[in-house]
Image (cartoon, rainbow, N blue to C red; front, side):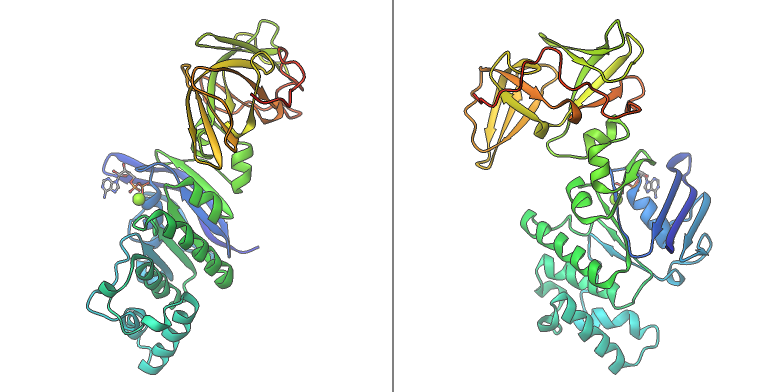
Length: 379
Ligand SMILES: Nc1ncnc2c1ncn2[C@@H]1O[C@H](COP(=O)(O)OP(=O)(O)O)[C@@H](O)[C@H]1O
Ligand SMILES: [Mg+2]
């Protein structure tokens, strides 16, 4: 295993503003890493620091084993691809591609050959004589990527490269970028605010908030075991439901108490009685059953169907969302039961937001105490 990118205790201040707080990251060669988090959390700052466009305030930053802290951007051997493409408008596609080689002294014929090779892999061969204004958004993005590829950098750094594209093209381009990564096998660091992009494209996802790494790991590990409430709410769509609850007197169950709903969920472990907790339930992990047949009942507020799936939102505070495949027959105003698989529940400390884990997973006992046998009958 070769570490291509290493960040140890990286901090960045803009004046008094602490933009990156103790960032530690170790990225193996060939990995596709996504930095994901809400706007303003420090993703671009981290990426720009890697590229050398920002000077870090403290810590260590290594690329391919070499300390980069004081190495200027040109000498870092990384290539950035931006949302804005940053193409030269007065140059053709071919000239855009060959430019970086030419200024490094590569001979014209050789640069042209390299451009042709890259254009063949990115599907631009037939567009070499066009100017950027004569290209679609997706084609421009491909030129921007080709311009990075032609340099054979040690790492590709992407900053929200698909944000300017429409939804359908974004889905297409994310597959294209991932396929390209699989062919080139260069290390890629990809910044996005879109958790779906991060989940679908990356081998390793880094979730950031307010300059801090909240959690990092394989995409499905983050989905299955979010380390805290923030990650739980950020990864997954529609977002995880959070229900306020408290550990019962004996420390052996959790009492859900919201709106007019009260329910007990038995724990498989012991927790301090009276501890304020939050129960997390993903919308896709709940099954709608007849009232009285699930862990608890809820009144139905809004029902939305996309054809392939039905989204049911409860008329409670907080709202709960349930997703069912297909059309469903639930209507606004119905009272429905929710059948829950305790293995798929999440539990967080309400005060810290941190995940509560049992020594032997899962944290909840086999069946919610109030539930009868799960019913197959749907409404
Ligand atoms: N040059 C700068 N001067 C001062 N503050 C900055 C500068 N660049 C970014 N910031 C601040 O740092 C935080 C992180 O910014 P950024 O890394 O661009 O976020 P993201 O890319 O995650 O949306 C934001 O609060 C932003 O306002
Ligand atoms: Mg940004």
